[in-house]
Image (cartoon, rainbow over all chains, first blue to last red):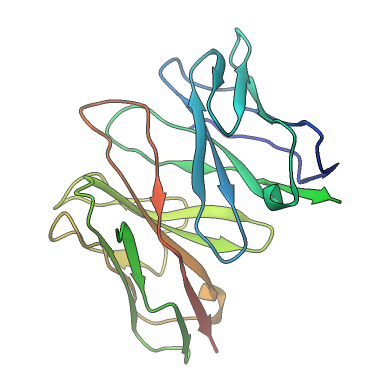
Length: 111
Length: 116
């Protein structure tokens, strides 16, 4: 199973772009990379998913280099409400879907 | 729109007692999961089920059991609770399709369990 490594915490200010990087050195060929957001006292919520290069949706962008050993979640112009824990997840292939979360990154957006 | 429903929301339990956390989904997802979340340790997978009738062990299965009698329900049982099982428990489901690797998990709101 591919393990992930993320920074424990990050601080930012309102209006700034935030980039959170996740390392997954032993990612398998068929694995996808998914990011989740979790607010206090709530379950995690899907943000974005990708396999390679760049993916963008209304919430974020996901950058994945050619070797796929890392990925970067980019949040444009963050607001106070973006303060949350962000998890990087690498999905394993096959029937045994033991989806493993990393430790997450606590993002704190300051006014 | 219910999605994933967990019960109870919170519970205080004496050590040694049996406890079942309930999880029900109405999305007809084939896969379901139980995670525990502890401060500083993120989310750790306890058990999972790829489809009704099958279950598998996750990262921290000891002291827990699950069953998947049908598609919608995936209860988690602590046969004899211990204080180290004090945690927030999240149930999740996903529609894994036919061998697809793109997986989006849908989580419940969590069950906070305190074992004294």
